[in-house]
Length: 421
Image (cartoon, rainbow, N blue to C red):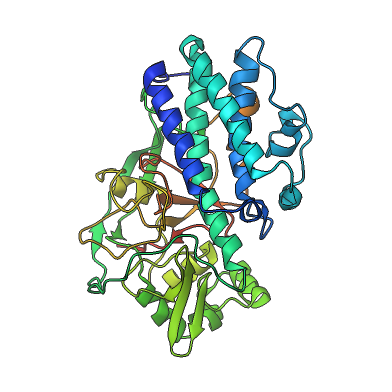
């Protein structure tokens, strides 16, 4: 977050955003039992209960503890449990063992949130500017965890042999397959990238400073790759042909036995996928999702194209409304939907780029523990742009930089192609 410029919203608007954000998190876990909210299916995923408590810890620690005189922690033992990676905040419970926390219960975590909600809303009108900026950061932080909460729940349920549905989905209506990919001629030469320091809207620190990037002649696809197109890649032996794969990607495919996107399974002659509404046939018209950077890069090679750079993507997306498209508005089954027609750069799936997640020229982490938010993760990860069906609407921008390791694919991640001209 940029705290050196701009200003946080007035307390009334900020309080409204805080309440909306907190209410959505709790609505997302409403279908879960205490056991559902406690399990951890892999090291990359966290229990739903932990997400609720960690986002609460953020507000309690960086706003209430540090800026409200006389505030007493709800439970002095809990910061050890719910700190994530902030070294400045001391020791913490090991991430791979978060699923071992049968206590506190889900009900106790919800009571913890209610305690912090009441204290923060009461303090909000008198908070200094720096503290209100942290409340805004906390809301955006919780929105990030809402997406992680959903994708982690999906993974938890996928490893249950019963493959239970979290929500009942709507009946599927057949739609026409999108036409062939169209190509948008991209900007060329020096372009401006990143957030301007004079922009008063919220942004994460890694989105700036604004700087120049050089783009060579290229074109970028007007839509993302569909499930049907990915099925053709599979049928053509895409997962068994090393010519299309980076060395690390090929090693990953062989070691893990990867043959299709995460949650896909071949049932007879039909590909099915697991989603929040249980297992259903793959929709060939919908954007492919749950693919890694390695898979995205291999598909692009197979298709005679490449992945766009993050600056090519940003220049093309700048003309589009970041609040458009299929994004998260309320609790319920979410999944990528077939294209409604016309170019789109937001919603459905985050889009892998070919760019490493590294600092922009002149980047400096903010002071204090929140300076650990993004900067220390600028190693070994790749940038994704846009937003997904699980991203809260209003969270993303053309400049927003998501990032994951190249083998990770439990998020709603997809593929947009680019090519040189």
